[in-house]
Image (cartoon, rainbow, N blue to C red):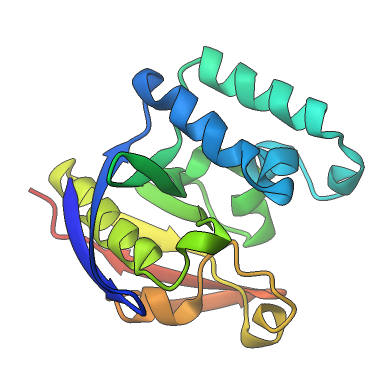
Length: 196
């Protein structure tokens, strides 16, 4: 999936690919490039609860990520610019992230997908990577006949503390998501897709 996005650095072309076995090395390199991602490995929504999550080691999280990959959980998309991996977006069936549904008191819904995390290295920010990824993800989910997509951005006060890994509210609002409620410092935003 290709996408062109305009950011502070002009128009940039990206290739957005659904995560799979052939992209594991790219994913690992991207995660290794940032202290926070190297520690988290984007497993926050895969653990049972927040209690004790901060006490987990980088090795614990890496091991969980390896277990997820071993059982075929390729939960997202990667963005490439000129063959360099420059972004990650975690996406999957919402019911596979039980902590997410529990936090928002959401009834099980096998037809809902969740966009839970974005990561773009600091050197690649303000180029439109997240915007390009979101557009490509929505197009791919629509082509796969997904009907409902949920996102969980932080409220504005949380964003001021730098906690933007769930994506900014404005990004989702600009792409057709509407607010459906809130849980703590997160907002539930939803977009219905026409499907094919």
